[in-house]
Image (cartoon, rainbow, N blue to C red):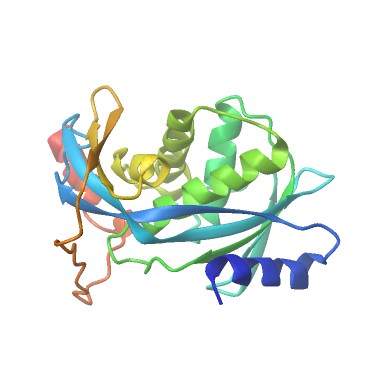
Length: 231
């Protein structure tokens, strides 16, 4: 069963079959050139990968956002008008964080039911968090009939990391998840936030991601310390 079929099936089980949900997806990423250079206003060359986070979504009549994680078999909710506590250390921080960041940037969001599934390995350094932020942001915007510039969506995902998760990340992950294109890497100038797709011929070349079996958790690692030292 595909990720799209999976989230649709779970959505019908949880929220009924009266409304057919729309489905949104954002990819994880692997970085080819440039580590710790995004928050130092340098250049990076990442590429989107063929794994991502998929969200089935439909609007609600109230101001609640209710989200279910297929991977964790957990459901959580929050009221858009009553922001919850930050940095709880749970997956839902990313969902509420991006919603509140979009609202602060002028998006008129309404309530929504969400079912979220991801095939990006968590803690593998493949930006599962950015894939979650951007796919959730797309779903919330569409369910509300709201629109923002794609750069604004990427910045809202970064803000969610900073405020609700506690990771002072650069912009590379969210930008790649937002602007990634099949068959291309993405050259990002982190001073100007200009992104240029770079054709990448993989007909005779494979980009291989190897599992080191070392977990990657930016919010509890020395990442923030490295950024502070650079600044």
